[in-house]
Structure formats: structure tokens, C-alpha cells
Amino acid sequence: MTGGIQWKVCGLRRGEDARLAADLGADFLGFILYEKSPRYLALDDYVAGAAGWPVGPRRVAVLVEPTVARLTEVAAAGFAYFQIHARHDLDVARVAEWSSLVGPERLWLAPKLPPGAVFPKDWMPLAETFLADTYHAEGFGGSGRTGDWGGFASLAASFPGKRWILAGGLGPDNLFEALARSGAGFIDVNSGVESAPGVKSADRLRALAVRLAEARQGGMRA
Image 1: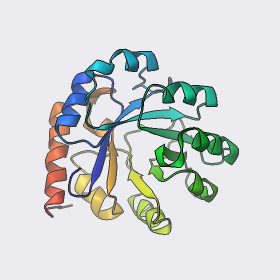
Image 2: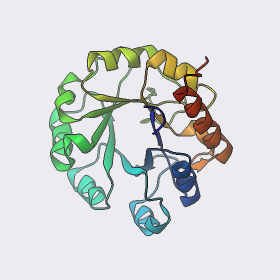
Image 3: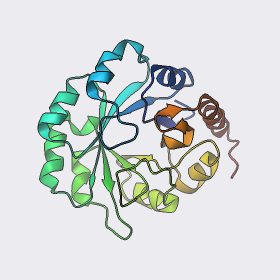
Image 4: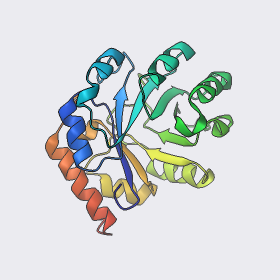
């Protein structure tokens, strides 16, 4: 953890990328188990490569509106947390099923929130952590586009009892501005530290770690 700012490297597919992220101090490693993602990692491949994943950072399974059977299968693979993306107007009973299965403390909810839509407040009791990603109509996250940092700050202020994660196009070039404008204490990086989908750039990961260290020391600059 870097000076109170936690960070997760998501969309990992290669052991060397995960090990570098761990060496640089990442708090969490994310693995996308959603077949339509360009960073998709099959659960069997994740399990087969288990010996190559670093031990330190906590591992997060990333899913989109899974069935109970699918979430049960993924939970058996030993992930610490479950980040679930879903339509903001999905029946809350579905969300409650996920919460009952893995527990609110291990569930990270990421509602797909169109512009002007109201955040689903009835989800609040079902998870301790919420992720705000940039909306795009074609998919769930991973667009590489930055989001509404001021809106993130407002959401976090409205629900101070929850942990809030900022995602969407974050990387070493815009980290300081994103932190200053959003007030985020937890960031999720993916495309902003890649050379290709699912292939992390060692240079960009190292640059991000340097900037996080500077932020810790109070040297942020927009």
C-alpha cells in the first residue's frame, strides 16, 4: 500500500506481469473471467497457472452478472474478492444472491451507470466496496476512457461508510490529476498500463509506482 492509496492492477493474463505488479507494491491483482473481454482469462487457465501467480497481493475475480452456479465455481478457486459488473437497473434480488454467496465484505459492485442515471442505492447494504468505472454503451469497463472524477468525489461523500474504487483510463500520465479531482484513496488500473490488451507495460507499471510514491510524499502535481 502506498501512503494510504491502494491500487489494483486488473486484466492480468501473464505471470510475469502479475509478479512485477506485486514487486512494485500493488495491493490487489485482478483477473477478468468474462468471455467477451479482450483480457479474458479462462478459469481453468487461472487455476493451471496458480503456481506462477505471486502470493502477496490479494486476488480479485472480475465477472459480469454471473449466475449463482458460475459464482460458486469461481469462489471455489480461492479468490479473495469478487468484482461484479452489472446493469444499474438489474433486479436487486440478483445482487442479493451474490452478496449472500460470498459475503458483503468480499463483494465489490460496479454498476454500469448511464449518464444521468441514479446510483442504485438499494445495492448499498449488499457490499462494502463499490467501483466507479467509465460508462460506455458497448460493454462493461475496460474502455480506456477517463470518467467523471468530480462525480466520483460526490458519490464517495454521499456514502462515506463504503470503500470506493476509481477506475477508467488511469495511468501514470493522469494519476495526479485524477487523485486531486476525485479524492480517491483506491485506484484500479488496466489499459493505462498496457502495451496491448492483457499485456502490461513494465515501463508504465514502474512509472505508475513512482508517481504513487510521489503522491505519498505529497508531491502531486496536475
